[in-house]
Image 1 (cartoon, rainbow, N blue to C red):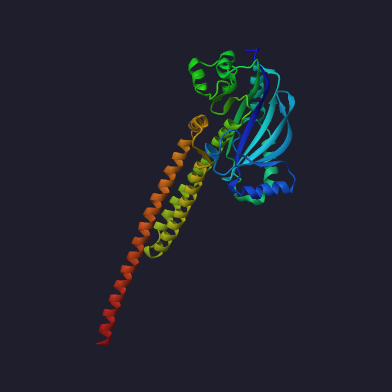
Image 2 (tube, rainbow, N blue to C red):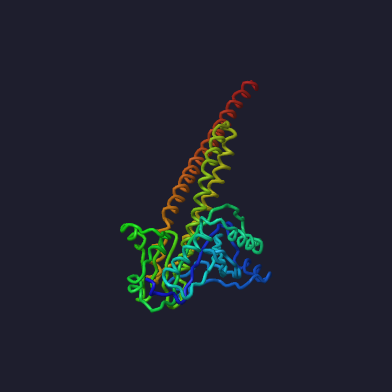
Length: 371
């Protein structure tokens, strides 16, 4: 293992935040440029034709400059950046260069970066970068979200190996498990197979291996498409998690409102039923539109390799399961809306019937009075 050296590579730590209901990307780009905060670009997959796979709305990439991070007892310089997605997600990234390291050193660097800035690290760095970002692009955020929902991911990528190895030779020469699992102790054979289960190659010399919160990428041409697809999958997961948590909070509130409305007299309940039904219909329409926008954020047509990587990432990150949970809760709200709509119609019919009876009674009384 020590014979394989990393001549050029990097370890990328991602931290994703839900910034807002929506980000006006052109406005955010203009605000960033006005304050001369650094380079900006609208991201597109670097090596994949647009007709094969493309972003529904290309995210906005912003340069946050170089930051110093304490990693493994040393201070390392990392290039900081962020990519903004129109559906409200900010994907912050710290890129640590890896040069002239043996495989053990590369694995150690990845694990140390995870300890320094990963999900269990006590560092204010991510908050500092996010606060700076919010301060500049605040005017581009629609309905800012100050919640704490986050996602983390670590990508260890290699561009140049010494000696040059193809994917099969590399897998035979090094042990990817400690890098992907972040474990120093040996794993059981079953656990090892599970860690290495999602491995993909298109050319003989490229490789992508996905794990729950990490990935290894061998890409001698320097293409970033696989890394960007993995980031997108994490962004979609975070957005759907946000919807799921929002609906978890919404359902008890809806139940309380329905109970309160049903305790009112039928005369008063008709209007409340209608108002509540309209509110529920609007909420269902809003969340459904958001979910569809997230689902269409990355459009896959012809690139079989990236499509396989993307599908595996979505399944591995349990995106379909979270999406199904959102759909179930939306179905509950739809059913409540239908029931309330029926109750409102019934209440209105009862009021109308009562009014007709009163009018008939009034006519009868008046006829006796006239005679």
